[in-house]
Amino acid sequence: MIQKVEGIVISETPYAESSKIINIITKEYGVIGLMCKGVKRLKSPLRTKTLKFTYGNFHIYYKQDKLSTLADVDIIDNLRNIKEDVELISYLTYITDLTYQVTKQNNDPKIFDLYKSVILKLNEKQDPLVLTNILELKYLDYLGVGLNLDSCIKCGNKRNIVTLDPDEGGFICKDCYTDEKILSPTSIKLIRMYYLIEIPSISNISIKKVNASEINYFLDKYYERYTGLYLKSKEFLKAINKLDI
Image (tube, rainbow, N blue to C red):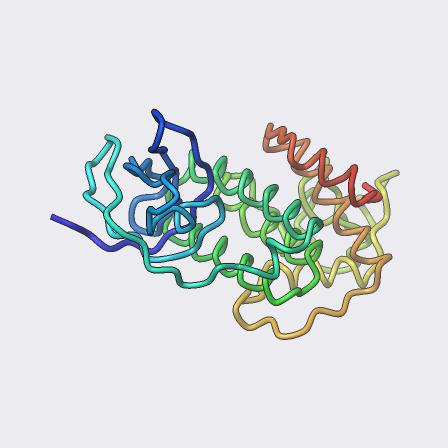
């Protein structure tokens, strides 16, 4: 029986002369593999519909815990703006790799919604660094290492917060502060906003470069300290965009 699932192609691997296997991330099943028979042939109607970063409704013969088979694809959005921009492609590659790692640890359907929402905003050419940081921040809960954004991580005080420390994993108040790196009050407020904001509601992002860089630095250090994830696509992203982190 054919099922229709909304999904995004996150990888593709050649198979035999005319076929390939693609992995798609879906809301219903997480990441699943699909056998795509004959799609590499020039006359195949599915040839361009099974390329990496295709976003559409996939009609599949689903087999739980096995390789499923693709029947057809209805394109929802070809993400043209991203695919024509090297910088946006580099961001998309990183958040895709990150999303795959998150789904390996937590198969919550909300992960797909977050990933899809960020991709669509990238395609609208909203600020890619801010969008990536918003996603990174929201993913922390699904990785089991969410931030404490309510009170001082050391004493529980909700007043006189002076910084947010990646090593301690939360706010530091004036009384508990020693020599932690100081984040500006604006960056601290923005991090909380990043965590709470609904991504589809974003219409225009305007964050000062100094704050965006400060937030990105914090999240990079936090990921290094608590997640154990090392992604080559992140290093590539840093290199081509000369991120100050």
